[in-house]
Length: 489
Image (cartoon, rainbow, N blue to C red; front, side, top):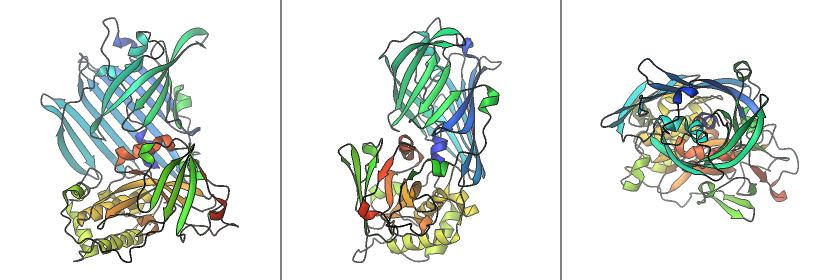
């Protein structure tokens, strides 16, 4: 769940050409925004455009979140500064995420040969060279630039923007979907409604922009709202928003024997798209009229012959390689994996050993962190995200292909329902789902897989947050209150 909060800082700025009569100096200044998650205030943000002594433009986004995770108060600080040359070319991007365990940094600088990206996570610095992005200053001030030309209803704009955390350019498209006159501070003002879609993420943002270029409100995926407010009001936020419960899909009655079931059938309603409809040996999720039918069955591997290490298939090797957040080539992860699995080469047995070790050695606590495997190995604490990322890091360090999985899991802990959750999948001769948080070498039937892959792929969950309903057939519902289950951590 915490990763979704981090994702809302994805830039939505399309690339535009500068009009000769457009004066960027009219946009210099600060705007404060209150940040709301499903209607509850969760933080505040400052968007600021400045000029330095060299004529360079600096665009600063500074957001702070104060959230409650089932009684645990959490603070997240997200900062970015984009620097543009006087002619508008991108010079550099400095970004930092500060969570309770410290900072992670992603800094990019453009040179004549392209772009150099330096990432620092868990105190480990990596550097890589990427192609030069096409982003310019006009990407950042796109709303103000567009309304300056008085666009018409239906006008369309394509764009790209570079995101250091994702290490890639994100493509999208904007549409003018509404134009109206509104009285603001006693003055009739033209207001533009702009719908922006990030195609790779499946995220829509509806922006309300006045004729002077000020963004009054952004509604991201129908659940996250950034609304312009005076500074004092924007900063007026405590820890009332329990993001764990407020984003869960609660049920009116519990499910009978959730962890012991051989099968489960559900009906889902909400903004699910093709990218969410995963079907495999354990689950199927398909369209049924105006809803989506979910079916899952218990996996049994009694007669299955697991693969043996080493894994030689080229198609699987990307899931063994290290990433910024899964530092599987680090000697500390490699040595710990060897300590846990010893000389074992049976991939299924290795997966079982790692699942048990992570579950037994992690201290479960809710944590608002931009998680990486090495940091979790050092702290051995966290929630489902930390359990799964450590399991994946150890699995890859042992030579076992593994990747992140996210979606929902049923929990009966006072408020029965499906809560956002993260687990893992590993290759043992075939892909299987593993949940180290619940010590499940084979994930049970209450896991609803909606995303696979890294932080970028998990952004596809954003449109679902707060917009999903689940119906349980009467035969699967418990006849009476079931014993409390462990909370999702």
